[in-house]
Image (cartoon, rainbow, N blue to C red; front, side, top):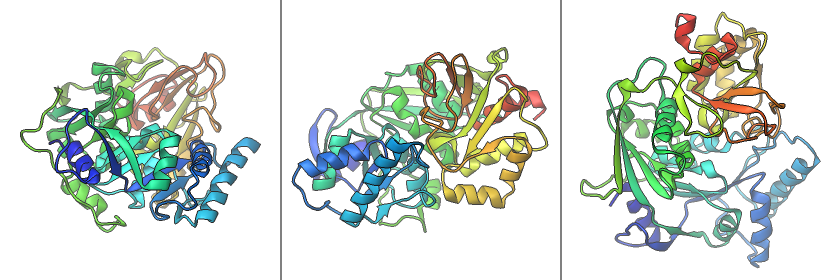
Length: 419
């Protein structure tokens, strides 16, 4: 079996499972946010259940329209707050204590290797970087899981992606996944497990792995996953709140497709409008001017991402024709960035630094685009109207390209700044 099949089998109480099989499995953690949880709470109450299955295994994180942007957002968040009090939930995280959910939960040790996690948010697949099976589901599935502790699944077919060779300067996990989606398309892994491996993955830091698994959904994947190793162990030890298990793929496991990539041939990559699969080398896009640059999100708002942006912004100014917004993904990241002097670098460069929020990424608040404007962001999606007006445009990149672009006023690379 593959690692994905092994985790599903264990949680279903079976010796083995195979692709296409329908099954019920016990979940280790159920997640929802301020957009999706209100629907789940309403449906949960319709089931007649009085109490959730386990108050220590339901995480509610208000992060999308928070700090609350308007009355409707405030009402949504109030519903989460009241339900959490009513059910005495241990894992409700208020503004000031929360973070962007998919960066926050791994940081807090709430997800570990071998876990089965569902979340009413498509980027729940992020946690596969820890060797967990994690996937996004609908709010009604979350409601059922809150009541029963179980969810139904169809075991996905698995694809293997092998990355070999040495990464070029400034190239990161974001470039690898954008290149991959550009190769296979936004439906190239539809309802499949995307298993990432190879020498480049084995040396990739956890931040890069989280970025890659985060964007598995952008290729249609059911989940992204990396077999846990020493880097995983280093990340979870002393952090994990529950015992965890390292699962490995069997040598004779079956894959519907295997793709391999020579990382020495993968350049700094940008996804152009209006699909993550519209990937092109950043160096070919220097004619495109940009109005707004965003660094942050559940994809690239980690401390390593902020450090990378700071290396480029230090001693430089954001182009006068560009507004730059930087939002650390969690309070802990924000605080550490402050201790390291990164926030000083950003503010000196004339970038705005925000509290953790998903706001700009989904065109919700704190960075909405006007008609005809172009943004380059370290986020995960660039669909029509994703960050604002339907006639705006969104380009996706890693933090190094984003910072260089902010300085140059057009899509650019660190090399253009002599770095």
